Image 1 (cartoon, one colour):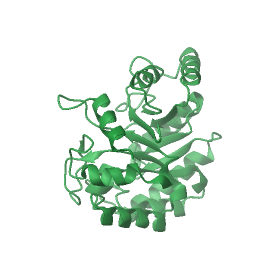
Image 2: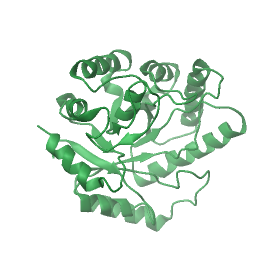
Image 3: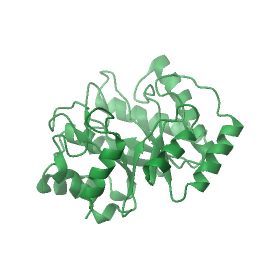
Length: 280
């Protein structure tokens, strides 16, 4: 394929199982959770599971694999929840390292009414604390958010400032989620809006930090701050805006991961077929 395209797939029953499903779909990019995404703890990865994961990955050909942290982590918070978040984040980094995964996607978190600036400062400081104790080379990708509630990361300036405040900025990259930025007010549904949005990203953050796309349509309008993913081309962003990103040759080296629904309308194969049809 001209692009690196894939899905977030389930690793239920063993982290290596998603590699088999990726092969069945014929995709060359894959995102997984390495543990249950809604639990604070998980059994350590078994040595045999790690070995099997590496064997399947090696035999899969040119497959890129990314890990996504669980949803409970909040490095913009404080108190007991923050301490549990830091512990879990350390474990997530270690699990990615043991599996040989380079990129780990993280939602920046929620400031819990302390204010965006306080949240930004907390994320940078807590990442630095974690990195200072960590000898791996796993890069954390801050994911752009939709802006719901007290979330941090729905403006490019938030991501820029976290990186600027960090003493370990070489360990931080960015995952741009199309549904999220659209809901946050970056209207990429038109050629003009797409050009403006990408220029803003490059000006404020820089394309050198951009390591991954979450390639999703949106059920909700731009500026709604509501995170609801839709099938490719069936949402408010639509085929025009998504096609502009998909065919942007500046990003041929970057993975496009779909986190689209699986329902009576479409499954992963259907969405993949639509995306392949959009490629020029």
